[in-house]
Image (cartoon, rainbow, N blue to C red; front, side, top):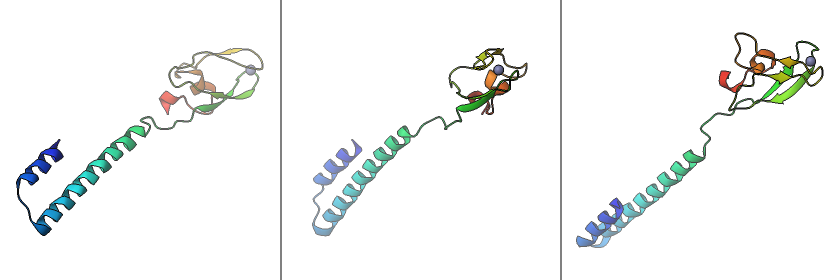
Length: 112
Ligand SMILES: [Zn+2]
């Protein structure tokens, strides 16, 4: 929009030789900058807003010491985990928000 007004304004002014070429160059550069800015904006949009978190946690059962790698959900806190070996239900300890914080090798995403 601004560029269009500028072009019209320049057309109104009668330029000769080098000055006209210079203006053309400036206009081209502005256009290039505009395209570059748009490209940058798009690149920024594509960048993930949330940093990559460790979503793999090794769960250790306090009853049978059985270990198993589990993928942690990012949207919810898991409050109950059933051991794959002894089938006992594990619940978070008093100060922890989820079973991963209590029994996992990695804290849950909300604590990272
Ligand atoms: Zn177990």
